[in-house]
Image (tube, rainbow, N blue to C red; front, side, top):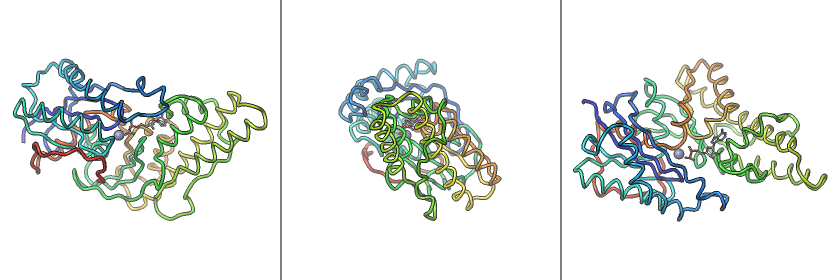
Length: 343
Ligand code: KG4
Ligand code: ZN
């Protein structure tokens, strides 16, 4: 099949994202013609977390403009678009609904095929968006909402090897940032504070290392951070900058060590495979380095997509639809928004 231009829409959390991608159905490596992401951070900041109602309204208000900007950046009009792809779940239902309704409107107005994409499949297929990676490959998806190891066996075939039993890794970064009053999103703030810290001052736990397999847990680690903070506050009346940096460094090292050990176990079943990482936490340099070292040690090829494709974006949604186009049928107007949708 020939090249298609696909418009991809993502609105399942707090980023309104639209992209235009030129892809060959079923083939890796696509061209991103434009990828616009508008963050809602400023709207949610004073609440200390994403407020679903506010997110949904902001998506509904912004989708039209973000789409126009993406088309303009790509030098295209809607008349050039061959298909519409939209995240149909999982995520905050109001935002997903806003995206699905908007996508249906576009598809109906232009008579275009409509593809509903699983957000997690979007993240999981991202390595093939940029690199000629063959199936199967091993993926660690680490974001604010998800944390799991997947064997990616085909565009619609994912085998879950293990994952978090409580918080996602990004969620733990966000909560630790909140405990230390560092602001949101927490990941980049914690990483910045950790850069001048001493990772050995606090001995934080490496959760579940005693348990077989590659399940993860981050809620106990967050509790350990809270205890260390409270102890310091009680002893000295507050936290110094050095205290905050040392806590962040200790926490980040514990997360990196845990992810690395679980990756080592997951890789044991995938000798010489490609080991890819996706999701916002993959932006963290300490974590990237730890995972790259494990891959090298296992003889695997490590792949970390560029940061803008690690975090939520419309290009991964458009590409995930392209992956399915070679074999499947579009969803059509019966497409429903799904708050929960396991892979
Ligand atoms: O993939 P993403 O943009 O959205 C979700 O689908 O969740 O991931 C966002 C998460 C947030 O929890 C954020 O704190 C975390 O990724 N994150 C980081 C870093 N940059 C973003 N975590 C650690 N280090 C970073 N540099
Ligand atoms: Zn995501």
